[in-house]
Length: 512
Image (cartoon, rainbow, N blue to C red; front, side, top):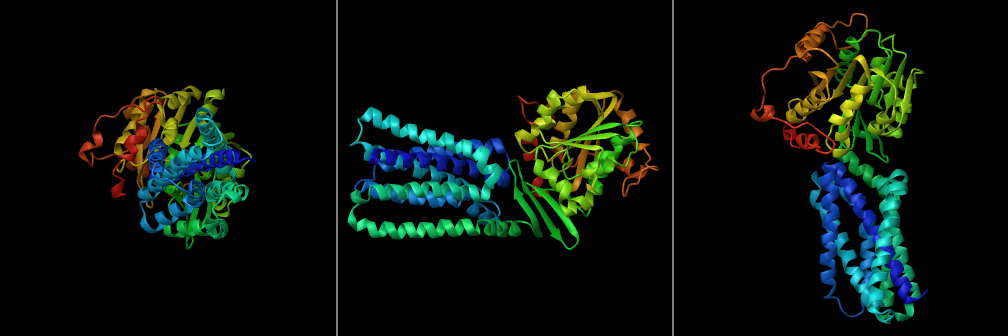
């Protein structure tokens, strides 16, 4: 292999590992910092800007270009390999790791930006300028494409954020070693011993890091959560963590608590029973999300129900709902009931293509803190639900906190109203979550009448642990606004105007 080709191969590997490192950092930033659109936009933009700075810095690098290029390659290999480990440890010890994540993004961009001009200068003796520039840039861009394909289809789904960086760091390192091997005679003899020592050092560091990565990340996760982590897994869609303290368990998705065994009934019973209480002999119920099985458990208490269709994007979450010991105990094996059909798909696109009609739609999704989740709290989505409900059908959705994020809660209420529902906001004090809320909607009726009907509900024929007639009176009653800006006007959340996640992120979560 010629010197020119091996240099281009090295740059191909650089483009591949560099772009995947940025995708990993963007995913980590979304997980730890929230607001996926903002994080992905800023990290990729800062990386590109840093590449420009790196290109500028490269003009001051002169003499022994090949050795300097190899040093940069080794540095980039180590940095890309350890981005996840560094992020988890910094989060565990320092909490807010914004500076760490963005700092690593800048460093990766600087190193890639320095490499490209250096390769052009090294390759200058082999190709004329126009071919040199185009072929070098071409290989870097091709590497970036392959990196994106690798991350989307192999890295994140199968290797997760723990091992994907080590694979990419190793690829970059191996190409650098190949470069040294092929161009060994071109390397000044005074650098050869140093390079051999560096190769051994990088092998030990990356190899040791890959072996201990899961333990290090688990350790960082243990420090992040106050209780012992008994299960953690990064799926293609989210990070699922289960912790345990004595006999109590908690479920977290992307670092946010979804439920606790201490008080999950105070969430699931208000989610399900007001809806079911408004229906006469409900037969077919659609559940969006709810892969933990808590909502399904409550629905199955109604003997008239013949079928429950549960649509959850992440197959791993529903699998855990069927097999994980604590979740199976909590949901009373509801996810394995023959009445339950589990579909792993995007709820929006699945409902668009579906022709079924339902007595109720129960939406049990994570909080709408991203644009992606906001689609399932949008006007367009609620219209789909409206069209798939039978004439007397009822819908309900978890809606976050009516106090910590009052404007987000009001936005969900308004959006559902604009989609044609007569709504009734509900709230309850969930011990480990704080004051939480839901928005229920019916296809026809007056708001006050719906509220009175809910307050009159009795659950004498249904086995419940918390909810009763008195609870319904409390859940449907709200006092005056707590904060002056809680009743400011809100916009309807639409796919082309996703405002809900902004209201959510601007909530008073510092009081939480």
